[in-house]
Image 1: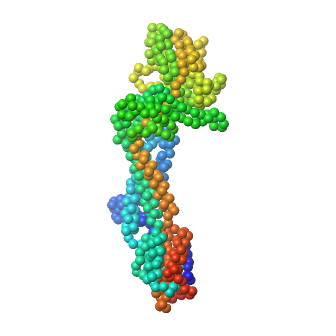
Image 2 (image 1 turned 180 degrees about the horizontal axis):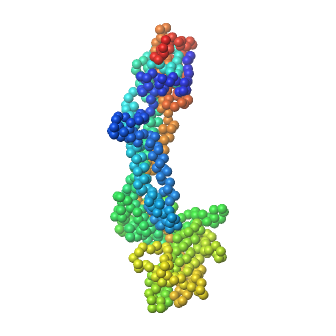
Image 3 (image 1 turned 135 degrees about the vertical axis):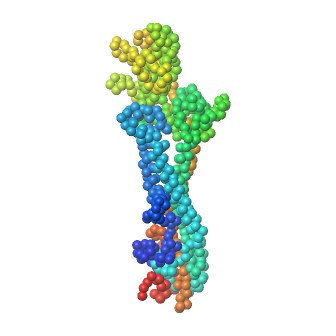
Length: 571
């Protein structure tokens, strides 16, 4: 084989992108189905500008910019509490940041994913992707239906080229080359005294799959935002829940999903298993959270099915999923009034404040009765410490471990008006002390530390409080998001498409065998790849070796007279 060479793309003559004559540029040199972009507005007047704007919006460059903008726009939603996820956390955040709250509200930072500016970016990206996909798909289908581009007139100008003389017949050589390329998976066409072959369509398939997957991903998120809903519920051990808005602590619907669309089911929390690491550097870290439940579907709550709900392992019922999102303790308190009448008893959830489940809460005794001839209400606020420190004089009430190794309930008491009958909404986990008077002992606030089974006689004859023990509670999120499966499938397919578009190379090979005046046959093989890679050179060399069985090379190589004339050369 007397003439073999590989040239990098930068060595190709500059008259055309691939060093081809102008007539062959579009057919042989263009290896992408991406539509050509215009550098400026075409036409005159409003229509021309609209057409140019549409082309810019549907270009890949703008689609990538919008995708980047959407990623940036989603950052506040992960840093700032959202009403759609936890309205209670939003209220606490607003109470702690009163100065910037009005600004954040005007910018819709507590509802990022439903804000006007986020929706605008989302819709523009949706339109841009649709405008990218349709013309690329149409053009790619046209490429698949067409024959591979015919061999250019001068193969010596290809980046990878080889030639040799053989005594075999030209038609036999071309037929053999056609069969070899077919076996290698190339789309091949034999005609005009040459073989044209093309391979690597999975690159463009991967490219289109990536765009279609992004489109599906956005569609899935859009569907979920329009037809989804979720609510939260805190359930104490031994109690139950029915999936209705009256029993949900909070509920957020959407345009096509409201309270009337909730799936009919319910469950009872039979118990809760919490296990923590007891030694090492990660002492106190959670190792297991499991809610043991019995649930029913429909309206028949007598046909119960046992089940467990764990973190990241939700219970699926109908079109809804029940997620376990929190855990804590509910001290069981009994309150008797000045007459010795039991006016309050039962578990009251306290909310964790740290990793060791130092919890705060209030007990509101609305039906206390009368004291000194006046209607009175009683309020108890304090801390529940699963494993209390021996002395927290300087640190305040804190827990040293999240499990109940040494539980202590710390309480102080208020008497007066809880304002529960004012008709205004109130937080069940906070005590409004504006109409209350703190009970005192010797001029100091009355405060007590109780262990399970211990009692406290309130000052000024207000009765007694007994710490009977504690129950565990678990908080759940009931979520209905129909577009999640579509979005997940789109994300997986986008990754697969990206892999295909990055690692599959589009390439073309031409073989031409022609008879020379001296009775021999000149065999030329040439290749062109979209990017500079050794793969096309390796494939061309393997093809040349395979052809040696049908077209063995003669010892003397082609002369300058054998080479095809360069159509661009000037004598």
